[in-house]
Image (cartoon, rainbow over all chains, first blue to last red; front, side):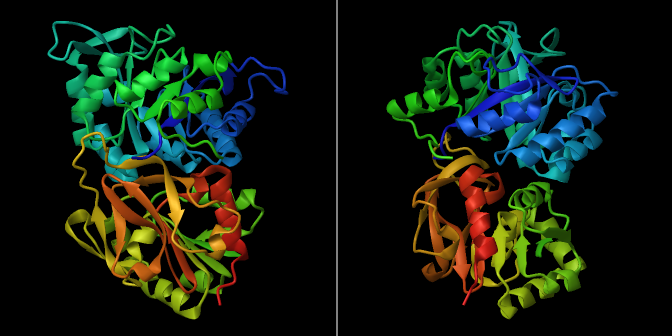
Length: 256
Length: 206
């Protein structure tokens, strides 16, 4: 078994970190390099950066921060948000990202997942699967896009399976019913995805307490645990989460 | 100067950034002459083994890499680069490797559905014996892995480190004379991975 990974996520807007970490020893509140380096020092196993306002115009800005952050940290970096084409992926990977996360673009054109896997290798291709509860669908979860605002009428779990078959190396499920609530990961959705795919699953959305992280592994079947708010607002420290998981018998990396 | 061998198998940015961080001069190159003129050679790579071997042959790098190893130049394989130094790989319906180290590269076949393939994450490496690359790094340290296949050397004598995943205990570090090769990514393994690369830069194989 590999170790459980903690993956803090930084939300980016126009090259700046939004919803930044609340503490005083940062010189510049929105600087992505300082945030990334801080999380690495704190024990993050991987880092995710999500461009929440990605547009064509700010693509250049994005490459700049991907390059700067990649030069500063020695842990894997996943970049997502507005990734729409193979060219977007190629640029972000060349700038130093270890993985690229696709969402709406994959739903619009599933072939993109296959092409990306063939071109960059499955391990570089993460597909983020956003869903909301809808009993009309076989799994009970409906795929949504555009930041959770637009339901697609498609089964989210079947879609995750399809992404794996197309070559996605990582699936990142987020339930819109739980995201940002700090009420815990949607364990039911995470577990449904974990059971449906044989590639690694990143639990995402809703982490608020130490137990939530533990539950995502034991009940949700995830090995990589993504969280944003809970680390941004210093409700929990990464090391504290890892020590807790270890106390409860899970294997984590405490060095580094 | 460290030559980072470029054979169009994945992106080499993170390897270069790690050496930049250590302030060790390096260049990414496919030119056999530049590689043979370097002080040390790093052979990274990710992606498909079949395409990688095709590209290596097309660039004439198969002979170059064998020469590097024969000449006694310090050589570090990483991930797919490590797999390719073996005789044969199970990937892509069977691929012939460089045959520098006898053995095969096999696919993880987990019995437990909770063991996901590829392995993407940190895992523990236990040193099988001391090696200059491991100086200052504790036995049982953690490194970052991304792979679906694992090295299975013909002889246990080349195993320098081992890791357990998906029900197998596999050789995560192998070495022979001036060659050392890791299945994990030292360039993405935090402070400890950087230390291993730093050790490689100082390594003087006998």
